[in-house]
Image 1 (cartoon, one colour):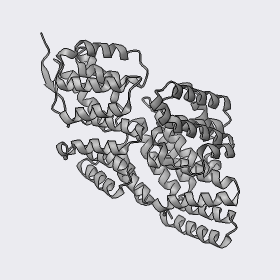
Image 2 (cartoon, rainbow, N blue to C red; image 1 turned 135 degrees about the vertical axis):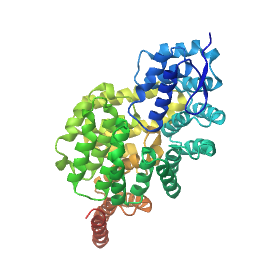
Image 3 (cartoon, helix red, strand yellow; image 1 turned 90 degrees about the horizontal axis):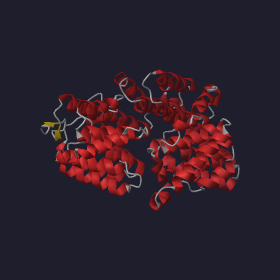
Image 4 (tube, helix red, strand yellow; image 1 turned 90 degrees about the vertical axis):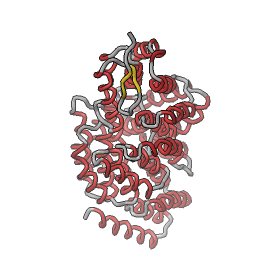
Length: 472
């Protein structure tokens, strides 16, 4: 006898005879949109009803990133019952199958999700899946278009406004992003993606103390978050302390107690922690704070020699290259870089062209870590613009560190004509964030290289005044 149809959280039909299966699917939906750490709950769906197409294909997608041998069986099971599935299940199946195909075209994958969302606009997990894809394409415009497409049918829903706020942030529409984030926060104070968006705005506008106070107030709701989201929120807090020139010991405390300590939890996902840990340490080292952080980078690099954490995320791999190179793990760094080049060579021609920038950034960070500054600068180019590198899977805020690397490399040459280029790069950043003391200290250094001592002194004075405004 055919299974009956039940309704999922969105109100769409799913063919299953099991209430437990639907419950697992709904719990998974919540975990995805809330950045929860129990996304594995979806594995209960095919256990409860082995014939449920939606349960099987969502479980397959969940396991894909782990390289689990169970994925083919889950897909085959979903296929074998596809004929009797609901139209909604068939649409999700089509999107996920194409998304996980080895030679997918990202634009077509987005179009398939857009088509699904036109017919099933309340499915916020498919929206989230599509937005994640857009993020790795560096296409915040497409991400915004997707969320705006479904917003009229979800304008009172939890989590939708955080999904609206993030692409607005990435497009530099800060006022609209703040409004969206605050709307989401008013609907649900525990909506971490809305919290995160508000923090992004405060940080971008150099309202560092306000950002820290806001996030500290929100932090009581973070214990159930995934390793990535939990440590990423604390990464933002640490960054605000760092950029606002709080004592470096405060940054270290956040690193120790709120980022590194996550690894002690039995269900932690280490690579998600490493991404935020290295991203913070690179900024600390650029600012000369390595003495206060002692052997923490070496301890982290020892973990990063484990090749099971390689090739998961371009952004992570690039940061790992710096960490390994800087700590003398040169053979491991070379192996990682060779692996990245090999992976690019196996991509479609279209994807190869796109990822060339990612590869050049990887090589540059490898050279930078080794101390080969001239070669690193040559790889980045004198007119480097981090915004062109979103395809590594990094936000504007995460990419800023590579701009700092570039400026540091320009200043490291000691050449006056290149100092002028550094000033141009700094001024470009100051137009966006003139309340960041570090940028003014860099300006002071650049003018000193030009022999313009009076101007250098005035910029240094401005930096010190700003330093005193945030956390003193």
